[in-house]
Image 1 (cartoon, one colour):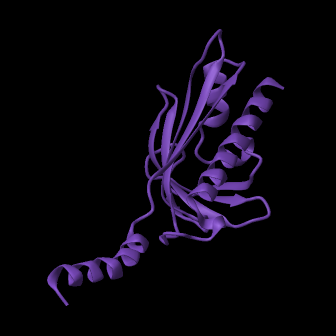
Image 2 (cartoon, helix red, strand yellow; image 1 turned 90 degrees about the horizontal axis):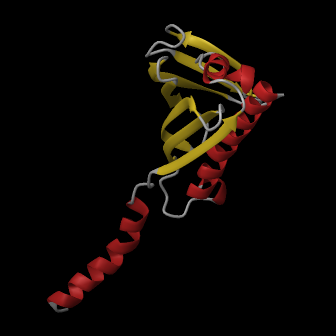
Length: 175
């Protein structure tokens, strides 16, 4: 076997392995809502790290398990309605700019490296714009994971969480 043929055989054999070894790509979800309420009122309802269950219909419980509410390093345990629990850690909190950032520490969700930012800013015509941004990767490292563990499924999951929470926050403040 000549040298070029040997290289071709090695590439052919290594190709599928390299495809499976490629790490999952970073994924992003950004959802926003305009709420007809003052910024301070919206922030007052949504700012507390231990109160997601008070305005998000997908969660039955939100309790601090470490630290102090709204202080960097605080850890909350969230319980999904009729489902499992997971923990998140507060990475940044800025009351003046109405923004906080957190990460998932432990979760049964098909995600990893999840970090999200939640912000409340003045909108148009006296409204308030609430924006939720999540960055993450799917947990399954396979090149072709099962559909429920794919990039599309991970994006759909987080999009649904964000949309459900923001729609309910709007309803609570406007309704």
